[in-house]
Image (tube, rainbow, N blue to C red; front, side, top):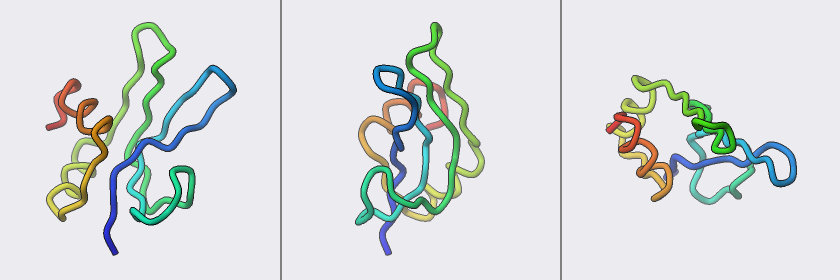
Length: 80
């Protein structure tokens, strides 16, 4: 099984919020996930980004890939 760290979209129309999850790469974006690592709310000013740093680094060390968006968020917020 290959896993990926993705953003899972939630929230209302034109008011998105995202969960940062570890999910099987073959599952759809909003499918069942393996582990929730945190959340991201881009509509707040300033935006809200909450992540379990230790848990996410553990998954990355195991070889889990990230989407480009998640990777840029991690770099911007000092996780990587």
